[in-house]
View 1: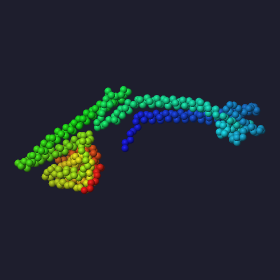
View 2: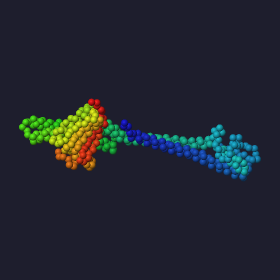
View 3: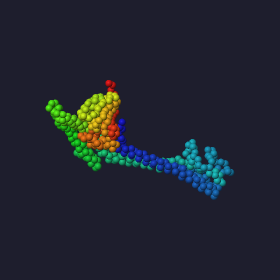
View 4: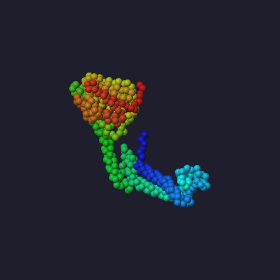
Length: 434
């Protein structure tokens, strides 16, 4: 099942969303990292330097007051005095400690000196407020600007690609079998379609118009050719039948008339094949459920006049019976061309048509082909070395083109001096009980 691919608008939208998300994440992480550096770096450094400074003051004045500011408070536990330190701080060892929320958002730095153990307590609430006002508020403004600019850029980009989307939708809506290209007419193109898209729309309109003309000529040709070419052939076949009915013909004249009749049948078969291949599709050919064995038997009977006086036996082997739903004429043309080729390349021996469960095989005991011949056998007008006169070199080409059109694979095997075997496979074959 075919799944439609993502459109250009969706791709642009996804790209802008990913871009905005990436910039937002980078900005948020940057602000968060700055806040962490401020809290864990600058504050700890300030506490350490404040501790060093206070110890220096104590060296100069043993009664120097401990630090007591808006953001920081200190306690000094002297060895020779009553411990003034709160109970929850006494258990802290030297170093940095973050107090639990029960004691507030505090960071404690503990250090020892000759004057005793110093506890410096820093209130981080004010730092958090500063980080919020000078970090996250600007961050919010920056993110709003990013989102707004991304949205505006997306709208402008969407507007820029709208003509391309319009052109794609118009081309998608065209019916390949009967395209109405007037929507691409330069006079009907929307006003916002300009530049390269307008040039592309005009080129597609011209191209589609030419295709429409070609399609109309093809339909006219197949219709006229079907009538005008068959009529003379019908006259020739009727004239040949009238001549054969004459009793005054000698053996030589009868052979000539038979040859005319045989050639007219071959020409009629070629015309049928060319008309089928000339059509855009198999539409127009009547489809029906038919047994392939009957077609093979009829074409084998008609091939008897091709052999003439050759000591060649025509044989039909029916290993199974199967039916397909298609145009019987197509199968008849393919089988007839294979039998005609086999008879033309076989001077003695046997031409066997085998009907299997899902295939028709035509095998002969003729001259066979070399490896180089097999590589070119499906090319138009190619004739193998030593081929008899009278052929056109298009029989196997027609078979191959019809097999490709109707998805009936063709295999060919051949050995020089032994013979050739060609098999047509029918994947949609249905077994028939006789």
